[in-house]
Amino acid sequence: MGIDVSKWMHYLSALGVNLLNPYESEWDIPGRDGSHAATFNQIASVDLSMANVIDQYIKLMDKIEDMLSEVTGVTRQREGAISTSELVGNVERAVIQSAHITEPWFWTHSQIKRECLTMLLNTARWAWKDNKTALYYTLDDATRAFITLSD
Image (cartoon, rainbow, N blue to C red):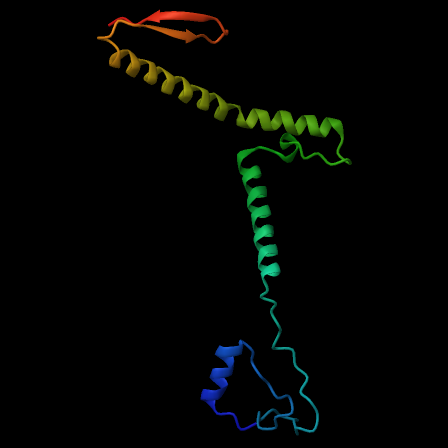
């Protein structure tokens, strides 16, 4: 076709398309005389539109969510994603098993919350030790109390 290498590279970079003449007889392919088009499947088109990329990202996120639910032990049934074909016993078993797997994590989280609140109260006691004021406080059982801080 009379295209030199620099022009070929320009078309490749500018258009992102590899132009090809299937009737080219200079390819030195055995049994090829150039009278009919070459039959090959080495070049495929790739759709790089945004819809395709977004779809691939969505599939990737679904896969990551599936892997996380598998690793953490929180099943789809526990999340509330129950299909109509699932049996009640299977759903209950999956939820109970998931609860057994994650119970130590909830216990550890509760212990950390308890330690944080204890540290907060100790810090508040130290900060207000010179000021003998009474604090108005609501307890866990919704009762109200005045607490006077001591040294």
